[in-house]
Length: 70
Image (cartoon, rainbow, N blue to C red):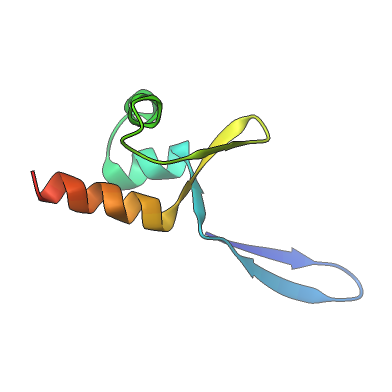
C-alpha cells in the first residue's frame, strides 16, 4: 500500500509494510471474519492500533509459508 500525501509546500511518498484486515482478506480470498479468527488464534500475527488490526507483510508471508508446508 502506498499513500501519496500532497500539500502546498511539499509532496512525499509514504510506503507502509502493513496491511489491514480487509486487504489481507482480499489477498487471501477469505472473509474478514476468517482473518479475524486467524488473528485471535495467533495464526496470523497482528498489532491492534487505533481500533483496528494491522498485519505486517512479513508476518503474512510467514503464515502463507506455514500453510504451504502443511
